[in-house]
Amino acid sequence: MRPVAIIGAGKTPFGAFPDQDLLTLALAACRGALADASLETGAVEALYVGNFASPGFTGQNHLAPLIASSLGAPGIPATRFEAACASSGSAFFHAWSAVAAGVYDLVLVCGVEKMTSQTTARVAEILAGAGDLNGEVRAGATFPALFAMIAKRHMHDFATTREHMAHVAVKNHAHGALNPEAHLRKRITLEQALNGRPVCDPLTLYDCSLVSDGAAAVLLAPLEDAARHTTKPVRVRGVAQTSDHLALDRKTDITTFPAVAAAGRQAMRMAGVGPRDIHAAELHDCFTIAEIIALEDLGFCEKGAGGPFSASGATALGGAIPVNPSGGLKSKGHPVGATGVAQLCELVNQLRGEAGQRQVAGASLALAENLGGSGATCVVTVLEGR
Image 1 (tube, one colour):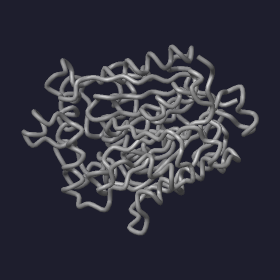
Image 2: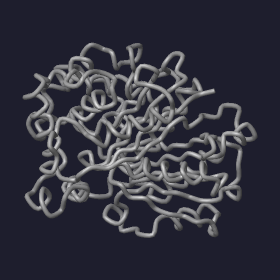
Image 3: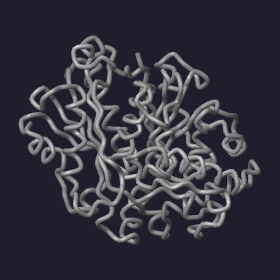
Image 4: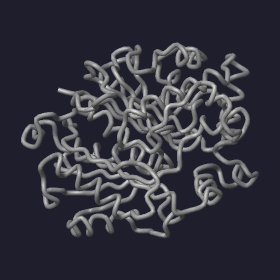
């Protein structure tokens, strides 16, 4: 397997955009990534698209060739990947595999989702399809309900508090306020987070990620060729995709995500690094409890200590391990199919020293964790700046 680098990155702002459709968003991100690498569309050999539910949100199936042909590359292989909220993380993993194996030299990876064209109730119904249809979905479970159960169990087992989770929300909103492309650039106080509108006990509105539109794209090439396209290539040091049961009742312990722990071990082993070597991380905070558990599963803190670790300021800008400098899904936004690649775009900016006010000083090694469902799919990627 040959080393692989990200040579271009492009991303749209995240938000609610009634004047932009799914295709418009995808094309903007793809063109941004190509322009970043000073390449024309004709150089691209394959397109890998991460998208969770364009048929449900917009009615559009067969999305990848639509994007490829509209981009001006109708002849290339174009494939859509679906892995719930880890859809574009999975697309990236498979694109990396193809470049590392020498199948292609230039692969474009795009993640996109258009969610705000549906009502909140319909969005919740579509998202629930990432769970076990024959069990928890049939029983009426939504993802806020599932993660509320996870949070309750974590609180019971480890004395995690609502204040601990609120600190995650406050921190991510503070980071997102520094991100001009974030969906919700709004600082909040601990009191606001604790007194937010109840969603599903113990979760409030401020514990839950946003319903967003948006797209992100990266361009992959062999590391040995990267200098031909950019002066700031970002090397993919390690990447892994793993899976687990969809339904919570199939798991022996719902306070941990085995897929996250396994993907983290595999990606960091491939990279030859450990948690303490990471300078910045983008973690999948679909709910605040998910960030707390990811901190534990990835080894940034001890099992059960994610709440106090977050409340200590260790995960804020200037802390021991800045987490979600982009604002995370909580503030940056969560167009589900775009989230995995958007995390990588943020880390590319960090490793290039181009993240502006939210720059993590001296960052040269970063990690992204992209989660699908209630822990059924996970992709972890370790990136290195040069």
